[in-house]
Length: 338
Image (cartoon, rainbow, N blue to C red; front, side):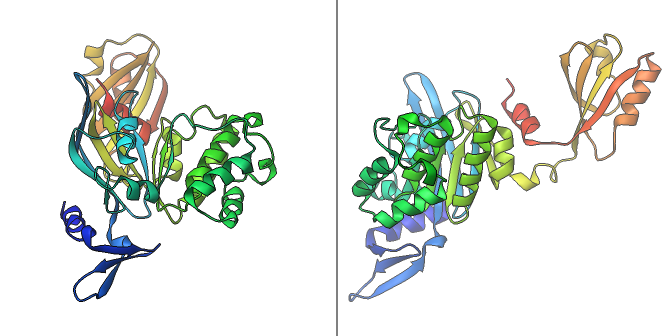
């Protein structure tokens, strides 16, 4: 909250803004400047939102630093799109505060909108317009030059498609057009809601590469259901469930901070849960199906010999016995299970 309070005190004295600096009016006409990197790109504090009796967001708080690529995960209906709509000023929160690039989403909506590039879940496009024509139309709204249109067309790989009608494009290329439009005014922050929904594997890789490239000098906040996507391009993951943040971790610390290990074992016949729970050192067990079990241990020792000895002592054979690393998928299932 310290950073947010400081921003609230000085933003009323903002004189002008450039790509890297914010100039502040002090006394006697003197201007001082500070690096924009001193600001959190996104700051959310105790945000709540209700739809009637349903609580979509419940006291959500987090901050995202400039230059981070953050994946936003959660089951359907967890509150992902609602929060993104609040950050883009499309919706208002019932409680709490949020800022983007130091601008309050409630009181400085125009400044927020100028600071972000937004790709909503259902990408709104004019299908009868040609790609370049569509981008030229939006460029006139943003008051950006024709050179910028050429830049985003090249950046998003639309050079060969720019003279086609949007309605003739594949789903993957339509997503590229949406990204190009979001990038037109060269925003500091990109908010992408399910940017790879409905893409085939090849299209998914292409869009993922585009996001990774544009994220080199921007802050990216994206929601997705694809765990591999987050692991491939994100620095950090925030998981939300039933409107509350349940996990906020750096991707590279998913395995290093935990001693938990997961072992998949398949026995040659049915085993009761009571018998499985007798395995020494077992933290939890999930009956995956048939004779297959997922066993969780809180230990830095390889527990496969323990499982093998358990099987032998109980007259069982192990058809498979695999040690799995702690990964994003297992973490997601763990923190969002009912």
